[in-house]
Image 1 (cartoon, helix red, strand yellow):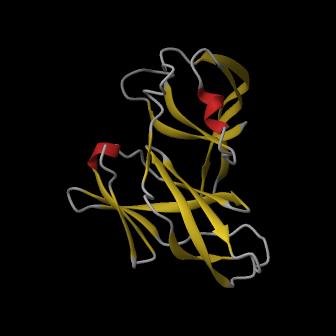
Image 2 (tube, one colour; image 1 turned 180 degrees about the vertical axis):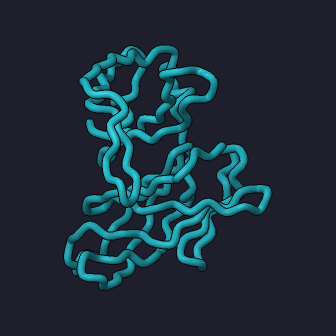
Image 3 (tube, rainbow, N blue to C red; image 1 turned 90 degrees about the vertical axis):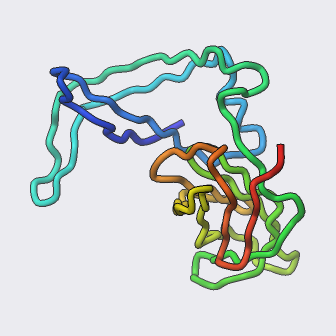
Length: 189
């Protein structure tokens, strides 16, 4: 599994402390949640902690390589911490954009939102050219009226992932809007 790190904050009263958010990136399959089960170990390796500044280039904070084993504890067999919400109660049609920029209508069969992004599962028409499609213009509308944009991340045929720039509290979500005309209300639990 690979991923990217984002600097959250540094040098806030504690010398030589850098807080980072590690965001794993992988193409999810239906059983991919098994990766994050109680007791599993994830190893994260950092090499040469650096940053990038426009006009300057890469600036190295510290040279070296560090590996950390992170044991996922207390997640619970019911995935009580790693949670998602399914927004599709019945399939709906939307447009997907192909590699060449052409659009085709697809049947959206699942929209799973978690705190960091979403996974969309769709079906193409049997006579369509099977290809990975981007599902564009997806927004989360919060109960307070604010809007969070979901950005395209990756996809394979039938599955597309989107990411958020900042985590979302699922209980604060009102609905999901796709391409202006599709509104998926918050599921009733």
